[in-house]
Every structure is written in C-alpha cells, then in structure tokens.
Length: 151
Image 1 (cartoon, rainbow, N blue to C red):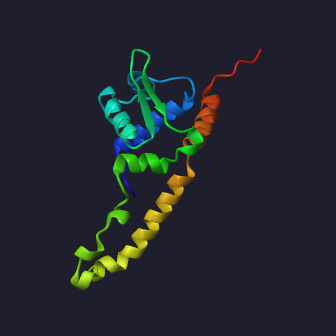
Image 2: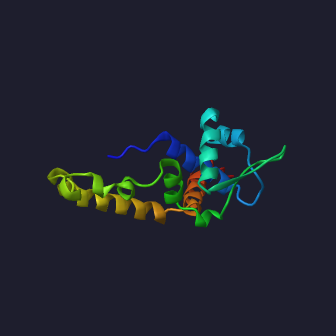
Image 3: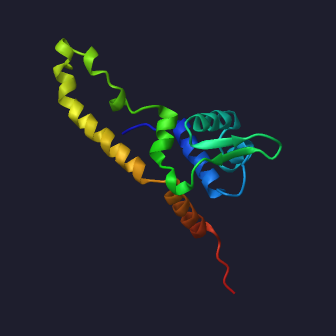
C-alpha cells in the first residue's frame, strides 16, 4: 500500500552493512556500495544524510570511512526512516491552516483518525526493529544459503 523510497531502502542496507562491521573500524562508501549493490552516486548522499541525522559518523583520512554512531541494538529503523524522510506527515500537520475556525473539512475529519492510527502503528513497528535484529536475520539467511558439504 505504501511506497518506500529507494533512498530509505539504500539507507537501511548501508546501515546494516556498517552494523555487520561494527567495532572493526571505518568502512568506505565504495565498499558498502559494492557489497550492497547500491549505485555509488547515491551512497555518498545516503551516508551524508545518515551522518547529518546522527546515525553514522565519518572518519577522514586514507583509512577513513563511516561507522555507526551507536551500537546496532540502539539503532531502530524508525531513526533511519526519519533521517531519510524527515518528520512523519502526521507530526507535521498544521491544524490551524485548514477549514473554517481551524477545523479540517468534513472529508479530512472522516479519515484523519484512521491515518493517525496507521502512522502510530508504522512508527511502533519501525521502533521495534533494530539493526541488531536485522543483523540476526541476515546472518540466519546467510547460513541457510551457504552450501553444505557432507562427506
């Protein structure tokens, strides 16, 4: 039903890549782009936005790159999505500018409560998923895909 922008998906996979290498030093943007099959021209933009949003830090120099600012268990998908999309639409709604006497039109009122519930459920779900839980799922899937050799 809802479209997820490519930049959000790229940001999640970039952050996941950094989470998988957490504590092992900085990771270069081109290495993340290659491993996650993200177009390199978008990778720098995504990482810049994640840095600006407080999700990652950058380290300069020949051995520099990007690192997560917090442990993977402390980074929710909500923080990544908000960094890439800005505040939720329901949070930014200006209630004083619509309709007569500050009230939204009838049509808006009919669906406002439903959209509010949708946004709250979305936020709750995104808060519940951390990079740590994605790492665990990723590791599990990788193990399932690895060929097994029996002798």
